[in-house]
Image 1 (cartoon, one colour):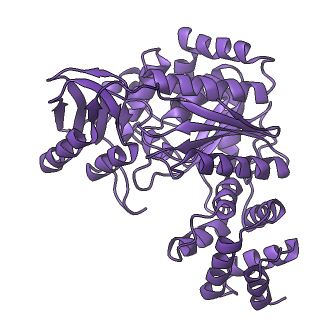
Image 2 (image 1 turned 60 degrees about the vertical axis):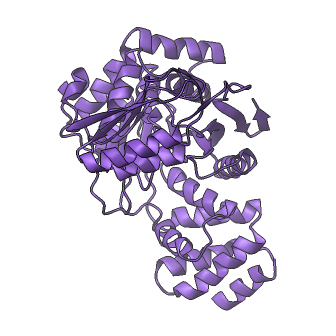
Length: 441
């Protein structure tokens, strides 16, 4: 088998066999095929696309390029959630404890944030001594004891994906549905959960900017999961403005704690309820959505989800006093108010630009080697459709650098578009994708 023939075949818009896909994935991972040949193949795939079978085979080959994590020793039906990335997306820290409090194992290997999107691991490291690196044995043991375990991915999960993404990034071949979907799903499916819900973000702060593209990506990923034998569904959700109010690591942990105690932002809590209800149905814990929602709401009313977060921190060696007293979380030296100079309603609030503003403050990474300021970030006091008077506080900037804070203040003043009330109320969820197809909301 020759790489030249595989490139030529896809260049001519022909279908690659399973064997051909296995060959190029294995040999590129092992450094026996040069970058320039795989770059040529990626461009051919980018232009001529892959069908459903090819995409599934690519995903399987990427999984087989490294280790898989066997979670069969975890009792019960294990569930997981994956978000395609957004701004202020703290759902894992709320959803996980809620699901665990319903006696369903919630297990997740997470990544770190890059660019304007935040990473769950970075948020958790705002909690003193919290360990994000766990052995598989400890990961399983914790899940069996408290129904929740969150940690970093092992080093050898899908090494092919790491090499592929680095090459795609510099050859203008990132934006292809098959390549995106296989990249995301290979990492998810290498970890042996029983059911997965995908939160596919769409809007200014998301990778997918329009609903049609987001629905196509969600459908592609659901098909991969189902083809691999995993129960998989997806929600397509709004990321035109940040989710919740807090953007920044310690600030988001504090907001997660507030939400688990019943005082969180409405949109963040509602999304956790919707994602959670689907997970409880997938796990067979309930028979109806109403029962699922009732069970989830009760975890907040009874404080059992909050107690589950404390257990998670304790079992991963973190200091639980940081949960019991969130004022212990890292705090910035400067908090700057952004005041409104207009009267009206918030018409829009570009999530990507808000995320970039938080990045300027040090709340995110420009490269994977960047050092994060865990205390930095932004807390929104007004969001889309909120009424605003002159002099109202729109947002609070948390920063350890006063010059950066003042620059960001100007940015945020510009980003708040205030005018007449929007004619249509914003949607939180646009659609559900299952084995039966797409259901628009």
